[in-house]
Image (cartoon, helix red, strand yellow):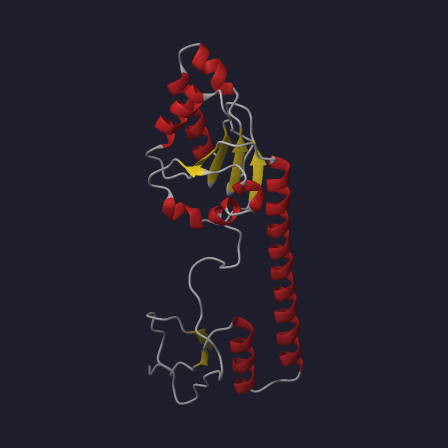
Length: 222
């Protein structure tokens, strides 16, 4: 049986047959470190052109969440439009009409509630000069949320943001598929060759970039 060793997480003690993989690096913990995150989207050049400002006081920790897709929404109800993990872009033109009817605060809160309930990981709203009342209600609605809400005060080409983000997401997915294929080929070959334990452990450590140890449980006495 093989195990990977993580810092601070002890595994079962190896027996006399334990075979550590030489030259392996410690395993990393947490989510995929190469995945595009909320902060990664916010750092994209097309996005930065909007002079983004994070309105959510409690959302800094959530900027490390992975982004599955980028989606543009201009409706008041996001139900059925999202599947979870999206970075949403919007101009929230719906709030202009709500403000004219005297229900701007209610509409802003309801819009953000819907985005959160739909499973989005972040929201960026472009509000240009002349729409100061919209900025006011958005600040109030977003201030204490854990959902990262960005205000874009300069014009942003949403298509440029989505294209760049999706290019990076697709590239990472292809990289993961290639890694899976390589692992499958290596272990298929090891099986066909009836490779010894020491070699299997070494190959596992090399592929995973982690310390891998083989151990055999002692037989329980009856």
